Length: 311
Image (cartoon, rainbow, N blue to C red; front, side):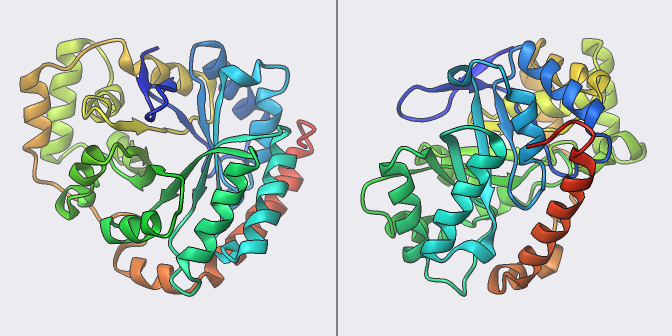
């Protein structure tokens, strides 16, 4: 497994992490997959209170050297008031079974709550040692700048956004350039385009992936993940609900794309909308939806987690 620098403190994380969004349907198999990843050098695992998978991650890391891991989670936007952030963090710590979080992220912008109030709570958590790094998710360049300006001492070290060979809207927004210039890591969720890479066989992107995969004797999905890693400050976090799928993801850094491969993928024109599509501005104005999703996923986690003794 390759490792990359995460922040100015020279902390290293695996070049490919593990995402846990939409896990929970088969917790036993998912737990085995997570443990396989950890035992094979993956130290970056991402979850969120909204996902209902923090308990699953807690079970996966139990008995592992905590200092060797980089655990990231997120506070839901309906919990962005100061006291709610503090309470949400304590709940996440409990579900994860750890006394600190490596990367605590704002899950989506919430324009109905002053960002200064939210960032004040995040800085307090960092000062107390309950979180080591502060990140955001689904933030535009302008929202990133506003959040950073609201902080007194700490720095935003990452922005988690949807990014894949099919979903490239952040490039048009100039987000990769801004993050690179400001030493902000891009954490790419849904890096396999929500399964589209394995389903789509007619587009120019798919043709390019298949051709390059054949050349390197790997899979199209591995090429798609390797392409993201080649960007330098991008860390893809694909999910895997089985050990077999996890093995494929973990092996995605075991080859190197050459300049012509990267240029071929870069030049493809097929594009898809990110999650939320045209409704993204509405999702950022009102966080009622996040409360509903968090409660729903939490309920599912309690039911499914009983099979593995989830915390």
